View 1 (cartoon, rainbow, N blue to C red):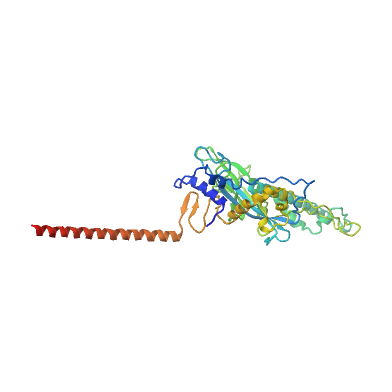
View 2 (cartoon, rainbow, N blue to C red):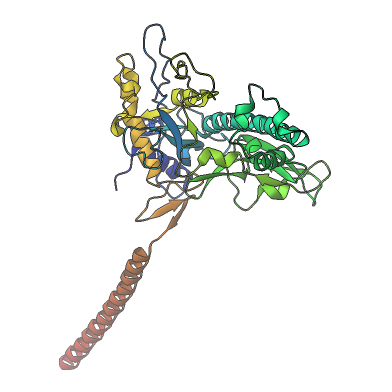
Length: 422
């Protein structure tokens, strides 16, 4: 099976961690090349708006595809692990997303771009965007709810409408108000927002045995084969050693000592399945009564939301393979993008192929599976090993029998020869 350079880079890291594997020196040409697969990608500088046209993202939407932890050899010399015997591998967190044409998020099979970015950047940008959407929604809902309450107290015919009344025409105020109240009173209801732990947050735990505080950390982790993101417990401050034996909810308490549960209401919106999570075009709400003299709504310059701009600029890009029509590979002053694109596309393909487990350890499907320094043998391999082992024992027994017969035969011949001579 042909693996990408990224996969080989992790294989080098695994060999270093496995005491039974052949030693691999850090200074080999191949090791340096493999470990710097993603480090070769250079950040793209912004287009000068006065000289060049910006990439038009107004007709695209962001779609989450997969998240993945990958343990890699550090790109910089001396940059990996604990110098006093700890792991030399570094855990990198990635999210793969797409820019899909609007109205095509369910299929998204042509004229799209595929991108990879570190998980922290993705979640910070996506959470900030979703929080703003949620705040705007609840602000409008509360206004409409108050308006409806006032209308119920007086004659509807005498209710004066202001410039914002049109926003309430199609809003179910009872439903939205209940949702927004639950969000606002989350902690009082025994919940904590999971998005507060998307970084690597320290949690102090009192140890009942010796009274000393145990240091554990909470952070985002990939789940369900990378299709979801949840909050898990880690052993180190870099959130690289995932501890699947612990649940974060076992350590969450409020100021009064009561246990809290996690609410994924906001976080789950960043990895919605089979739908886009954000339209890159900022669509301003337009009062249908405000029209120009021609009877058409006034056209304004397209505005791109910050989430799309931030992620597009920060991400490694794979566009040419998917027919992305507005990609920056078409611009002459972005030659570095074309040089990087082959590496990025190959790395994305490796991650999507399932060559890593949830913690970032390498997994080679269809054969010997290497996970966390151990080896799992397939059923076919077990049968072959058993067959050859039994065969070897049988041959050894047969050889012993022949040896015994030959020895007895030789002694008999000597005895006969001795009698004749006498």
